[in-house]
Amino acid sequence: MRGASATTTPAVALVGPESSGKSTLVAALTGASARAENVAGSTLTVERYPGRDRTWLDTPGVLHRGDSATTRATLDLLDTHGDLDILLVLRATHLDEELAALLPLVAGRRGAVAVTGWDRVEDTVAARRALASVAAATGVAFVPLDARRADAALPQLRAALGSPGTFTRGPVLARVGWRVEPPPTLLERRGLGPILGLALLLGPAVGAVAAALAIAGRLDPLVSDVTERLAASAAGLPWPLADVVAGDYGLLTMGPLLVVWALPTIVLLALLLGVLKASGLLDRLTTATHPLVRPFGLTGRDLVRVVAGHGCNVPAVTATRSCSSCSQDPTIGAIAFGAACSYQLAAALAVLAAAQRPGLVVPYLAALLLGGLVHARLLTPRAQRSAGGHLDLHLLSGRAFLVRPRLADVWREARTTLHHAGSRALPIFVAITVAASLLATTGLLDLAARGVGPLLAPLRLPAEVALPIVLASVRKDGALLLSEPGTLAALDGAQLLAALVLAGALVPCVVTSLTIARERGWRVASRLLGRQAVGALLLAAAVAWLGRAVLA
Image (cartoon, rainbow, N blue to C red; front, side, top):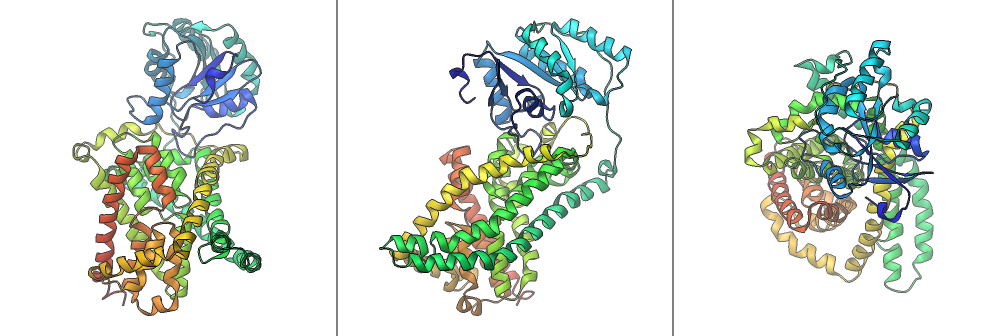
């Protein structure tokens, strides 16, 4: 929680299960734009929103029997701040089971209950009486509302919190007696559902990346023209400033790759996942694809984070806080190994275009995906491999309702991804650019490449690819050096593919590595990165040796 202790106004914590509408409701209560991620269970920390007469705390969704870091964050808040009033946010469609699961967490506290999704329930006199009976048994006011259109219910909700009741400490025997589920679709079919879900998840993502790259291709000549002129002007700066600004790895040299190639991919993928989330379709897709990835130690929701990593690895890794404790490291491993971030994708496509072999992008991404899944499988605890049923607990209870997404909801879902990419990845990008420029101008980069070159022979790779691989281990756009004519002339198709795989997966870029260390600690991060390096070497060797007959 950020800054709650510094305020003198009363604090109210919104507590509820995932996808119950807490972030949307806090936005309505405060007039602020709630910061929520683009997957279920996606509010990753306790967020503080100052209001006119009280402070609102938006907490991560509590997953019943869940052990994620986000669930623990909410439980820790409740344990350490006993004076907080509580606004319990429950779905009308699953009211009985959610109240039974969460009431013990808030028993004895003051507060009220917001019943979201009331428009999904038939609003009859009998339904209102049943709700009043449960409210009386619980000891607090129940306010039914539609979180997407909550304005009409806000005065009643504020009044309930102005004179809060006390949540009962005993079990609530009264029940509303209903559970409302939307009608099933083809996604719920046993055989067809997983395949259709995977197609609906990956197909639009591929389309978004393709559109972003097309936009970047049109912008690149314009931006490059401007940066080349600026670089020419900066050439007269004193050493080493001239190299840092306009050298081979300088800010003006590498900056266009960030602005032109990476940014459109990040934005379009974030908006796509925002549309899927705001419409409820993303929750359906995660449930549908879950059987396909469960054997690898992942959930369907973890797969969404891997897909998001193709835009930017940083918010994708950060989002693993809401993973199960047993799937967080496998998910991070799959992102770092198999999710080609926008820098990496742009660099790989540029290299393949220079080699006049653009069709290799399909086996390239397939190799990374396969390697990432196998890597995740090996990171999954042995006991978990045969007890995948525990992962089923980390899916949203019941089918999500499908709605027409509103622009405000889409933007709210996408903005956190963009915020993380800008506030966390961009500063490190600048620092890495400066470091790479200094390493290059002092000759240390070439020295490291000469040391690595002889080690590549067992992988059937020539020494010419050593420098691109070394630089790509610092920042993924370093793989662009593979497009040098002399390097391409030394490579057949299998070697080119293996070099791209090794440049992309040997280690994550420094930005991702630092993010993993921040999330999991240096000890765990070192273990994850060490295993990834071994896996990438084995995969590159297999591609180079086994693929030479097919990709000569």
